[in-house]
Length: 213
Image 1 (cartoon, helix red, strand yellow):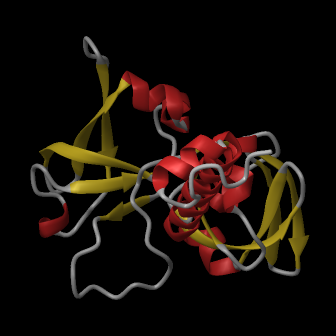
Image 2 (cartoon, one colour):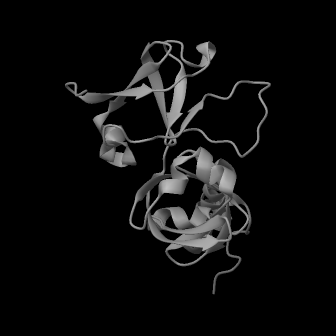
Image 3 (cartoon, helix red, strand yellow):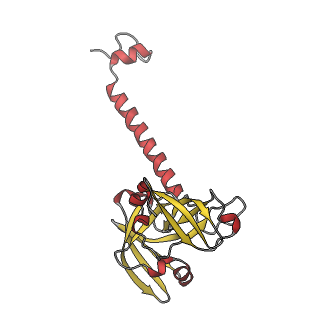
């Protein structure tokens, strides 16, 4: 249902009463949205156009299945990794291969996200917490077990499909810290190159006349 600066998603699903209260947060294909209307059989959520543009929600069709997850509460079991529902980018399915009853899915990701990805690390695909198997220059592969294939929309993915991607929060923070450290080191090195003898004398590291020829 379109609005002036947003669209309203109306989802038919039965959630626990505490999970469908007005104002509650729900992850829809990995995107954190807020419930604005609710009944026992369905609920509504508003998605801003920026959200629709930056995620795959803008490509949803009426009747399409979506992955749902209510917000985690303190004391709830944590079976995967911490996910915020703030999508980092949209990936594309490169290939899907059967591995017995499981599947190996290769995804191409936006280049800026690859530095957060490593084998055995965590990744969230359409709201599903997964472990990275392999990484190459442009993407990564994940293994999806039969239970996950049946319980989520990952079982219906096809080659070329778009998926929402959220990288591991810990990887993001570590990368940010390393970037900050590198910037500080470069700043110190640049400052050291710009020091003159007069600067060292003024700071008291050299006596007047010392170091001059």
